[in-house]
Image (cartoon, rainbow, N blue to C red; front, side, top):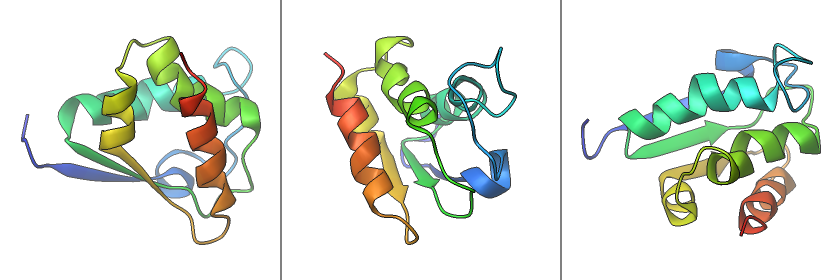
Length: 108
């Protein structure tokens, strides 16, 4: 693991333009699928993970909560580690970043 490595994940280009749903049993482009196939490997292999949110057809709250808050709630990542390592970029809808941070902050 490289101590200073970073990765950029563009959800629209790298995952799906139509991210939808909470669980992979309901959607192939769910928050659970994104978390397991993209976020967890990126967090394990890189010291910084940049998530580009623009370019999709939108996000449901279930997708965002499942993908990001459940890193802590389900996968056991430390909240401070998640907040330190992941950063979000959205020129189209910066309020998405506040929404995601709210889900992460809401985890006890």
